[in-house]
Image (cartoon, rainbow, N blue to C red; front, side, top):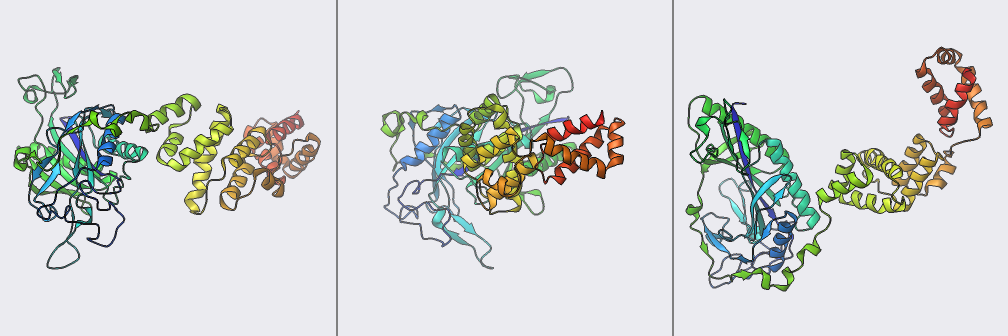
Length: 496
């Protein structure tokens, strides 16, 4: 690889508080009518004063704890000055020098900081031919911003990080973080630099040795000289995050290969054309003329009672749940992923395992039917619902005991999740209780042999696949009620 990518992310997430960041207006992302959740404060009328939303501050602190970060004791708000129609005050209230949270990591990526600010209004450009309009419902909504260190090495890693952050925010209950609804927005800072051509090495941003640099890419400090940074905005899906970064890395490499210079700028992502496009030159922090907001008090967080013992408010976090499922039950990664992403399914699984009394074999069997069969049914039938934990656990015990076959278990589950009922009752009504009486099954075996003499001769000649066919015919004749193990045993006896 001739060039090494360096990627950092800035991710904004709207917090799910009842009211906005600095006023009492309703924070309702589902509101369709424009300009109804507004007041003189979030519209920046002269003489109005903001007041801090304590619940928003608490949400960010809980995120910080989950990240293993440092919660700062002192914080203040700053005015970030820039002029745009969706900024009613002519500045945005944000945090610059004293963020709420510093450090920490997520999914192996180091975090620089997490801070709070207010969201902007929403500009709409497609409703009229000759002018744009502004909806101020979103203006002042609490907005968490998380900034990573520039340590991400690929487009996939960047997208995976964003997915993991979304999971965390949902587990903590601080944000729905829906990218489709604009509640979570990702911006990527992307640059490339020359990889090494000899045995040199230097220190990366995390202080660890990084192989892959030549003399041209190492500065006097022995640390890598990063390439020209380009920020890409308007990434509204995980797929867009990955594709935009891949496109931008290729674009930058082609420019350098021509011998041209990259420009530090902000670029947008065109989802339709699948390309980035230039928007403006990238601003630096001094362009925003940050200074402390004189209307908001400085906070010493240790003095606020509601911010004490926040660790006790944290639920089991996604990575903790993954480790538990792996250690306690030995579940497959694909099964675990289903329970992590789908909170309802995960809770059902946890509650159901208690009824199986920690039996790993039963739990693995249950997980297989849940993730393979139930989710398969739900894909084709949106009305399919999870059964009760008791009924599902009973079905799994019946399957494990051989009371019903694998085919019968699937059929019973399909009835359970679509029309309801109780497993054993359904099994009796549908004739799915498995027969174990060898004398009764022997008659079935003799009938199958008589119907398929050539296949049985193949089995006697040592063709094992023929046995599977014979067992299948036996199951078909019994409508799935014959025990396949007994079928196999009796066919083997006839073979002698």
